Image (cartoon, rainbow, N blue to C red; front, top):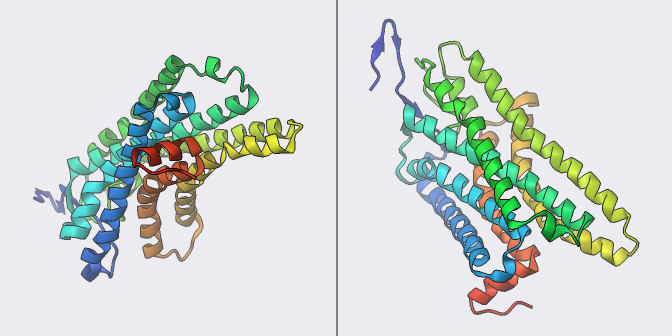
Length: 313
């Protein structure tokens, strides 16, 4: 498993980490984690099913919501295997190739979700700025083109990451910092020159964070448009259409920004806090997004409850 390379031991298997000090409770910790995964997968599949089967939901806003649900499902399935192996079976080893593949899918779906949130902010701006031309501007074919172009962008952006990791040599150190593989985490274990990985990883991170900047700019224009509406009631109605999206943006970006801030500025950061926030980054958005959109979007709520044979108040 660990072939000798001169005086060093070359690593072919990495070790993931669960929650240090709580190994004896892993079987109990696995119960809420499994429940969260189950609810996330069920919730996002329900969103996709309802939008697919309801003609009244065949609108740009709901097409973008479908893209968000697909991104959430991708994130869930990307991290699910290693999380369950650790907490259900206390199996922490992962082969190098499997680790590189996992980090590709996690980073790819993360960037895809960030891109979808950006598209959705543009969708809200168009809906508020030009409500009468909304359907003619965002036609079904145009929505499909936008979705495919951003999906291809996300794939191409993160595609070099596993190949740049594979060219590195890993020796002596094999312990990762999370329950899943991330590019920056694996890169730090290399005993060969990883400057290419560092700079390209920084470029990918800046591309993703630029989405949040453009989302903020979109909301500046949305707010400017809303303030130009004469009726106070119409202002509130317009802003209310953005609440679900704002919640989704906060759910997605707050863990990322918190984690990045702790890595950069915290002098005495808690390893446990870092691990919990990192796990929340992959667990919480796929779980909460369907709940937020069902609660705050009446059309989705009514159709979901209708499928369940219940009536919405």
